[in-house]
Length: 388
Ligand code: ATP
Ligand code: MG
Image (cartoon, rainbow, N blue to C red):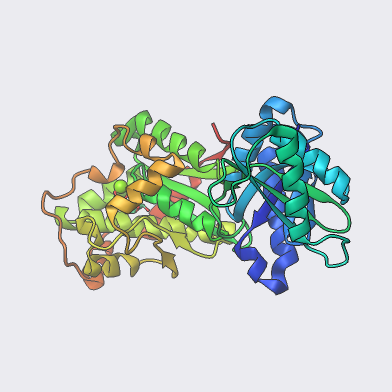
């Protein structure tokens, strides 16, 4: 019975100067995310976006609404019936909708133009009593089983059904591109997701030691990537071979420094890819003190090798809260699949927790990091992932 979907955004409404650009970006992202269900045209209307469901199969409407509700920048989404902006048309639509459900109900009507011949309060009374008479359902304004929102301006009215909350934030793309270092762990997918919520187009990069971690890790990281693609597709995921770099480090450096030197090498790879993709920042899943390589002195010593800014959305978050987000966004299950991360390779049982940048730079004198990074980039494997 629905013929439209109405999408409300949150923050982008506050950026008055860029509003049209933000609305267009969200419209494009909706269009792309829904393409697999059918062709839609997203329209910009005052303060909201809408699209017709005429090319969408009725059995897909739930999935369409759910898909849109996941997109960064969306405050809430609702399936809707669109009518002429007259009391008769709205009454017919809201009664038909209310006949589909049971229990108490409430009407929340809002006119957005003062020139309309009825006020919001008149609409609530008029539409509420029509539903009550037609269905026998009682009105309950405090704790209703269903709430029907009606939005009307001089051109059209929408009668909305239950709304589904989105994640808020900014539409992917409006903040430019970032390179996100994606391990097979719990944290970095969450960091990538949070960057998407701030409008970043994420290019995920995994450093991969094929002979050490094998295809299991590859499959695992692909799975994580496909989950992330539910928030913006296609997700570009690049596997960069890490074997040579690690071997050189193992030969050249004492065990307690290896992990930190691996990290510095990863940031170098990220920096090189940033230039290739014109990306504005490197994202990591670092969180202060979570593991030995993430003490403040070690973070400083590692980031010393990087082109700023290196941004870590999880830097001050607790593990429990990170896990909750990972579960909510659907990456947790893939993240806890078994699979040896490349960085377990010949590291010390007691890694250094207080290195200096100077010490790491000295260790790097013993190998040609720039050459190794360039060679690694040549061997990369690129995927464009769609949601599973
Ligand atoms: P995660 O759960 O993200 O793996 P972690 O707590 O295990 O995080 P580390 O293994 O110390 O942290 O890695 C710190 C960060 O370095 C990761 O969050 C990720 O951004 C990056 N990183 C680590 N290993 C890799 C890898 N193999 N490929 C790409 N990035 C990596
Ligand atoms: Mg890890």
